[in-house]
Length: 135
Figure 1: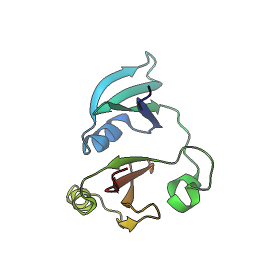
Figure 2: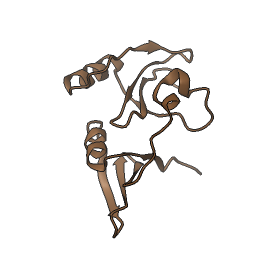
Figure 3: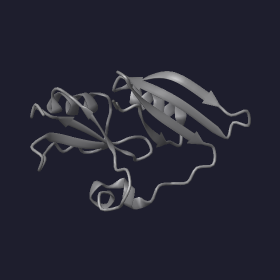
Figure 4: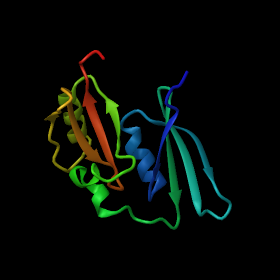
């Protein structure tokens, strides 16, 4: 009866964010800009799911606690979204090959999956997860 349609993020630079998410296969399916250029909206599509990006000319920075996993998780609200991958090690190498500069640590989670987090151009947490549990 239900499927996930989209995840929404607010970003500071639409072009930069679209280029970043294109690395993972997201393609711009729809874009809109207000007449006064105060707001841009883009729908990036991956499979049947959309990533909806909002870019306000006058935006507010996220709190510092949202920039690190261990300070963000206890705070109520949406945390991050995850992209499932076949090989966590190949994905780490892909990130390094594409110029990602921050340290990437692959972790075996309490839920018995392997994962790592990176940050997008605005510091928004993005998880890559190899889930072979067959759930």
